[in-house]
Amino acid sequence: MSEVTGMNDGKKLRTLKNPKKYRTIFLSDIHLGFKGCQADFLLDFLSRTESDFLYLVGDIFDGWEMKKKSYWPASHQKVVNAILKKAATGTRVIYTPGNHDESARHYCGHTFDNIEIRDTAMHEAADGRKLLVLHGDQFDTVVQCNRFLSKAGSTMYGRLLTLNRVINAVRGLLGLPYWSLAAHLKHKVKNVVSYIGRFEEAVVNSARSQGVQGVVCGHIHHAEITMFGDTLYCNTGDWVESCTAMVENRNGKLEILKWTELAELIKSGQRPKRAPALNAA
Ligand SMILES: [Mn+2]
Image 1: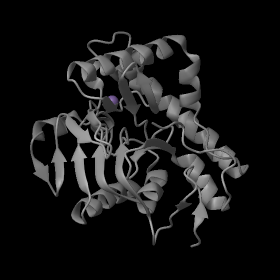
Image 2 (image 1 turned 90 degrees about the vertical axis):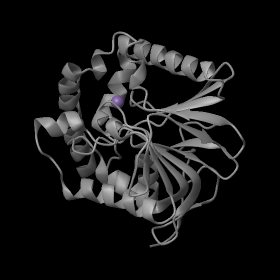
Image 3 (image 1 turned 120 degrees about the vertical axis):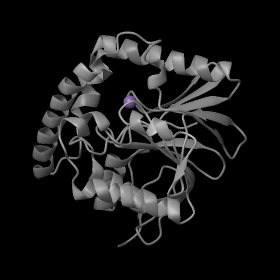
Image 4 (image 1 turned 45 degrees about the vertical axis):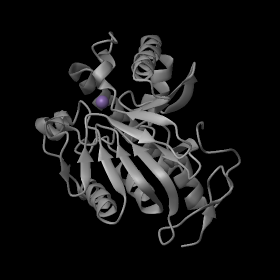
């Protein structure tokens, strides 16, 4: 396998044998056990990257879907195995459960297979910034009008993701890159946009009240790194629609990687025309 370029810092994106090393990787909303989970993209990401810290920022499993029907393909088990292997070989793995994997919350404070389970965590970046890490559903009671994330809404969301898979199967046959219908629609629907705004505000207010420099969350499946006044807001996105991860480099610089775009670049061996990272801080 040859090395190809694919990072916006101009360095080479490493291959399987020589993975790209980050200080920290933040992942959330993987939804293992749910058909919509893009496990193959995630396996590709996990195999090409390494880190000192790995934060699993909630909704790693989808207990709601698993209760409805048993769905556990080999690729989902491979994701679990890849994470366990990282935990066993020197990566410090911290897991802050979310609402879809809320059963894991019973084990907050415990460590299993080197995976530390915490309700919330505090990450100190290489540049000294303190970042509160939590899934984000804790603010659902503060932020009203979250039908899009409710249990009833999740059925509709599931159908949308099925349609998304059909569209992308056709796009794949036509040689077109992955495109997220759900992510596209979300930006068009006014009350979802206003929900996202209120969610971000509630999360940032909580970080501010704790006297930290920033917050890392997931939950709304919308990757973002942005400043709200003096407080940094980071959302790692998800692996059912956008296939995004947030990474921290050795200097504490944070950046969002959109793996569907990077995977295309790796496949084609091309140099990116524009930076694949969504934003950085
Ligand atoms: Mn969630």
